[in-house]
Length: 376
Image (cartoon, rainbow, N blue to C red; front, top):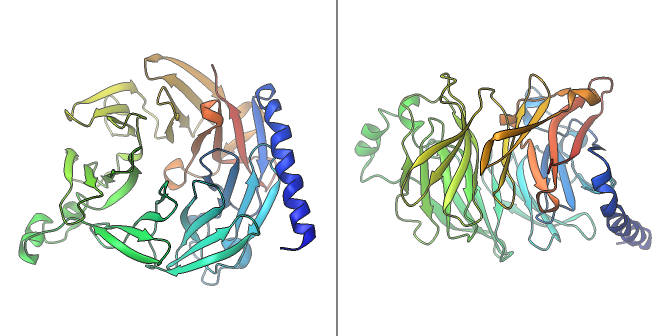
């Protein structure tokens, strides 16, 4: 790295520390991001924000430009652009920061995993993977393993060793024979495969197992120590692929799952808690608007969004009937994308603030990500 880049990085790091004490004074803080980047990856400590263009915005592009495929890293507290990562040639599917924040990993549509060195903004490793998949990505706390979703109708999940760049385990639904598989999936019809094709994944807090949710709302529990075994079904879904659940979280103790489910029957739509040991599912709060959803790091608070009214609603799990609504329409922002196409909410600063994406200032062409004070 050149001396000027070292100086720039050092100054930005100091600005990060200096700005932290002013956050609580501002209910909204906007971070102007370049391109159409409204999807985001956030470091575990909430200091760094990486944005990337969502493929759905460029679905007809046959020759994506460097500006479209760039990953941009910002300081959350200051909104300053730290790095613009442009070596990759295709859109980002997802990514994650390493536990020490020194590496950002991104999985690209054309089947390459990039490991970016956050000390100089350069790729330190490029791993040839599988084209068209790779969402989501989980970076293990040991700094040596990744979990990503693979392709085909059964959405296999792949465990990667970053030192070797090799796949060390494959987690997929396994059948005694192809004939049994065809029977189980109704001849590979959509209605049959939607029981197995996942749309959401979450890694357990102790990193011993992970959960997948399918297109028709089945919830499966996978043991990372037993890749040859089929998962345990925690929740039975519907016969049709109606995508009821898109965002799911573990509680910090790893004993429960919290998620938002949307149904055509408004009486059933809302925030649910599922006890893993007993399989008991409980509706915590009835929410009738299809929306994004997130659980705070301490597992005590939930947030969901109303896209039509550009509003956020916060509630405590222990007191779900007491809801605080924050209107983002008051500051002139309107929804840009449906939340199920992006990662709309991420709690940061130990849950005292919320990063919100998927909104655009109605008077400008520049997208913003907002840092919002979480109501006490």
